[in-house]
Amino acid sequence: MTDTLTDSYHRTIDYLRISVTDRCNLQCSYCVPSTPFAHMKHTDILSYEELLRLVRVGISLGIRKVRLTGGEPFARKGIIQFIRDLAALEGLEDLAVTTNGTLIADKIIELKEAGLSRINISLDSLHPEKFAQITGKDLFHEVKRSIDGALEAGLSPVKINTVLLDGINGDEVENFARLTFDNPIHVRFIEYMPIGQGEGPAHSDLLAPAIIKRLEAIGPLVPIIRSAHDGPSQRFKFEGAQGEIGLISPMSNHFCATCNRLRLTADGHLRPCLLSDAKVSLMEALRGNPDDEALTALFRHAVSIKGQRHDLSGHAVQDMMCSIGG
Ligand code: SAM
Image (cartoon, rainbow, N blue to C red):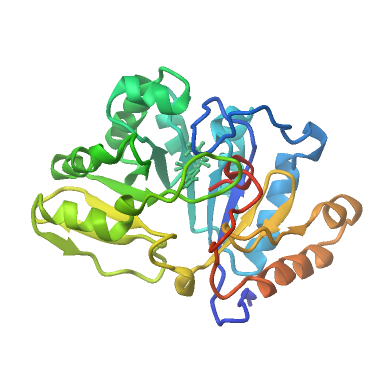
């Protein structure tokens, strides 16, 4: 019989997000600090063998869904073989990746064949020049190629993650939303979160309630009923549209009551909450101990310290988003 991970507030944790690297080929202004910072040392990064061992332990405790993130997951060598190895693990029901889409345009079919279930591609502007301004790289057309390739390959659903940034892309909400009329994509608007040393205040006119009003001005929005394994987004569809719209609103609307996640950082920390600095190190047990009992206990400990809800009033999370994984 499989065990389960249940926290102090009766939430079942069955979803593990793994940051496979803190390195990224882009430098998005809101995610990566503009001033130099120390990356994790190579010796501190979990090897693929170690990651597979941890995922196996997670599965024995009821983890059913894994998402790879980063940094940029495709900036790490050997990632496609790792995806293949993960996909082959018995008990894992869903394997997804969040990527900036700049390195995979020619690898979509290989990824599908490796066993990837779904893909989220981050894209904060539909204008190539603005894309370059936000990310520091002129790679808009590569991302577009990846999105088109993923749609063609049926890596379904293809989700586009768009963080709303005051004075930068707030005027693009309607254009992103209209993409869902003729394309089977899910556009997800994410409220900017004060994490690490990224720049910018909270943007009150870009919080979910204001965005919903703007979307309603385009056409009637039909709510989509949440299913048991849904993430935190509020989901909608325009009548007759092929795709969907999601709003991820950690700032304006806590979704903690339905949180089912744990996060694993590339340097071997389990974090029970994205918006809290609490973390549990697995390194000592992982590298010093051949049996899995200590790791199991640390997974349980991380779940036991998961807070009821996040609290960002008055402080930002200290660790950088690119090291936690978003
Ligand atoms: N490199 C990959 C990518 O670009 O999708 C994966 C890592 S990135 C940290 C994961 C997600 O976090 C992206 O969709 C990104 O837009 C989002 N993100 C980063 N910093 C954020 C912030 N301060 N507030 C809200 N979302 C953020």
